[in-house]
Length: 328
Image (cartoon, rainbow, N blue to C red; front, side, top):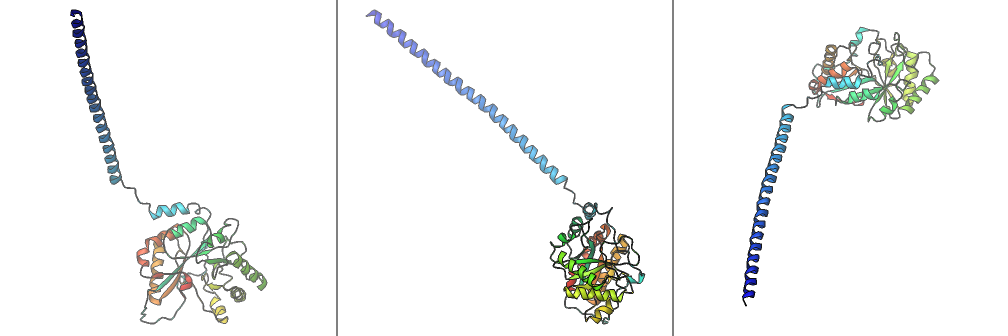
């Protein structure tokens, strides 16, 4: 019996020790979990703070340094930079300073209009994509008059096809102009030749209903040549607008003989290409439209002309800018 009691005591002591060991292991595990959790929580909080600080810094940078707006001068320079070396304007191809005066029109002493006076601004010599982009960047209603295609600008007709309304700027013989266009109409061209040329223009520009003369101080001053041209234009449903490159133009007489209304530009915007002069001419065109109820101005896709138009937006609100087919 004595031997059995001893064995029971040993078993009881061993169980107690195991129990203590388990308790210590659990305590150690809990303490380890708490320590790891503390460090993880601290690091997460630090990371969150750093991210927040970065966001705050970014926001501060955005508000403190706003992106500067692109000026119209810079934008127009960019779109026209390819044209400056190759583009030659016919703005100076006029033979009389008296052309600064618009055609004589009878006006009443007091004009009262039910709507705003109409002003059509024609931009001549349009022939490249960069010129079209520059003109459209103004967000003003203007009439683009496209030169016929040639080797240096093969896409002028294609560019015109994307416009709802456009004109053709038809090259005609000048008294004095060195940079003449190919396929220019001449005073000695036969009726057959002129009619064929107008048919070609209609094929290239199917929706054209108005043309104006590019140069043409010699051609438009010749009654026979103008008779042939107006006959050909009538046959193709096209109206003529006189750019008035000469005071001796026969267009009024010829159009009257055909029973047609004479339509001509009133103001050249950029006969001189400095911006103060162009700004003055824009004011003159607006004043004339107010006096008469309508007016037509002609300019070119020069940088200074487009900048002057952009800077005149406030003044131009006094008139209704329209396509040229809405003036008469």
